[in-house]
Structures are given as C-alpha cells and as structure tokens.
Amino acid sequence: MAKEFTNDEQPIKNFLALMRNQVDNKSRFITKIQDEIIKIKQEPERRRGFMKFELDLMDARREGREEGKQRLVKFLSSQDTAPSEIVAALVNVYQMVDYRMKLATQLVVNKKRHSA
Image: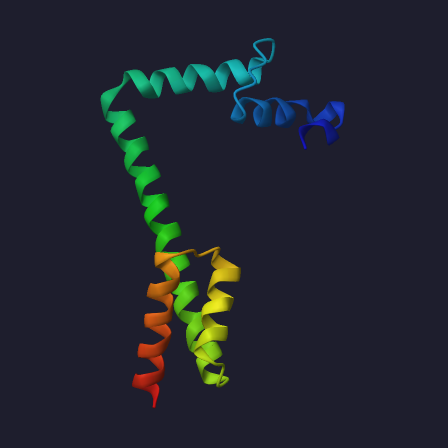
C-alpha cells in the first residue's frame, strides 16, 4: 500500500513503513516520531497516560462490537429470521467461532423468547 504514494506523500509512506517496523532513519519526520516515543517510554506519567488511552480505545472497540451484534440480532429477529440464520449472520459478520457460536445461539434463542 505504501508503494502507491507519490514523492509529495513521502512522509505518509515513511510513517506507514514505521508502523510495519520498517524504519527510515533518513526521514526527519520519522526521527521526530521515534524521539517522541522514547520520551513517552521514559516518562512514567506520560507512559501511564498513553497506556490508559490505549486501554480506553480497546474498551470502546469492544463495546461497539457488542452493540453491533445486539443490533444485528434485534433487526434480524424483527424480520422473523430463523435463529440458525441469525447465528450464521453473526458468524459471517463477526467471524465468530466455536464457543462464541454457542453463546450467540443462546442469545438469539433468549431474544426470541423475550420478544414473543
């Protein structure tokens, strides 16, 4: 993907390479980013703040996924979709496997009981 950029977009290309651990030490932009990362790692308060931010992002993603699953189940249930088809949709959309499928089936069955 980074190979598709023009020369004007070199800083972006360098940044994407950095995200893949392919560092270009000739870039002043990348050097500044690396210096800032070192500062964050060396300052306990900034490091804690950064780690808390990362955890908050992970929680928000998890909550968003759960809300999306619930909306999908609710919508498909309102359309009189068979529980097995709802589970198949959850598996397809969220790449759910094994024990998650069992939990999803249980969720669908419970939703059907409560909405009846």
